[in-house]
Image (cartoon, rainbow over all chains, first blue to last red; front, side, top):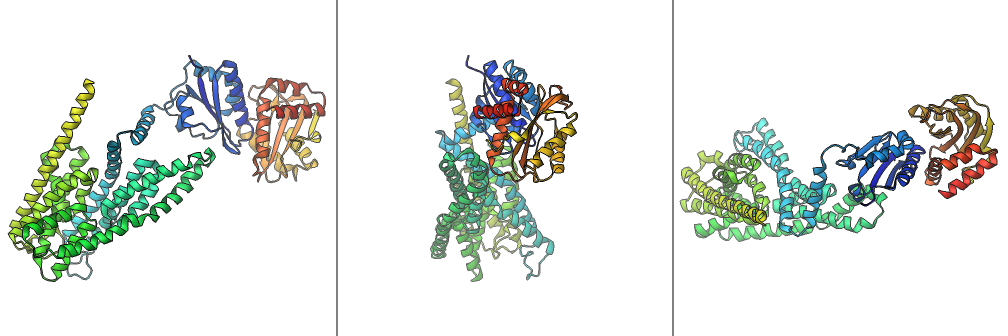
Length: 476
Length: 152
């Protein structure tokens, strides 16, 4: 059997004498009893001989001899003897004997926490890159979801007062509705920053959070939408990973400085410097898309519907979607009510796709997805496309094309039916002023159901794939 | 190290009877030897520290200490008494050997602090305590302290 290893932390309020006496007493006692010991001292000069994570993990037990806080939560899951610094001096041998005899109680009982985070880290550096990326996305999405629902529903409710009720110059202006729309808008505007921040947090823990937030705000204010936010989040996370590799040679005593100074300052600086990479192309995309689109305004309805539908569902609030939407409103002011009808249909469809999908394929979605899907009936009906983002962000490469198909079907049918919509937003709330309202509803419903079945089938395949993997694992 | 220990700061054959008298004697020596400006802040500081927890540990040793703006330079005052003093020490034994650490408030340089922590460490060793307790003169104590500190 190898030598028993013990780690200890000593500390006293003044940190001048007892801290070090206890440390010395423990060392002498350890030598006498033939065990290995490493003692961290919390003295006036700060923490010396600091215990590393590795030290703690390998230890057979922990002795805390302190009259002050020595960050004992590091020792969760380990057998810990906790006494005053005085007993550390006087009874050092007895304390060590207690560890040797295995009589030390386990400090709180949640060792899972440690193992879980260890697994997380392995997942990041491990071979399963796809799973790691998915995990980061999920972390972002699950934190973003409440903002989408909270903000979106408030905006939707404000529309019930009339779709122009938040405009002080309009006759339907209502102060309460304006307030709802404003606060809902604040919640909404945090959506992309939260997504980016928690993607980065998943990659690089707390230092990532800071830089991810900033990257998200850059993406948001730069009009890069949620896809820009995802890019920004990953960028921010890996910048911190890179920085921590670069800084790993710095002495341990600078750890505090790293966390509160180096990581945020340098991380934000780098992210901000390459913001042009995230944001500048967006403006270009937006402009070229708009000119591209206007050249198609008189094209045949199927081609136009395909383009409008695909664009609207592509980034839901990002530069491509905005291009379609802005073109629609511009044409609206020129008296073209046909074009906007297709844009609206395409914007309403993605949330409804997710709503119908969770309704018909319930068992392939988790509880929070089911709830979010049902809320999306409200968001979709009020032209709040962003409701679908949490679903799309989990696996953009598959889900976005599905939503694009659904939106395209809605838009194509809308153009084929010759529906006219004279309002730029409001969803089904503007039905009374829509020419061909029933046809429009049918078009949107058709597109949404097509999308929902594609989405449901995809989730079903995913589920059976996971099941197959599980059985394989069990068989192996 | 000579900075911290000084022959003039070591006094044996003390006749003090109480902890308070010990503090007063420490302050008196500190002031007359240029470690502190005035006695009262030193006495108060030592007393305050003692209220937090006892500085008396084992086999008659105590290490009262304080950090005060009134302390001009770091210093160690050593008192060896003829009779034991009640100190509420860890092992309950009366104190006969007092090593008092005085540190300036703005002691930024860690040199003194680590010297003092080494001093604390060395008192844990039984043979050092034995030598100190049996020392017959100030010089003997001074040399024991210096040698042990170097061995740390």
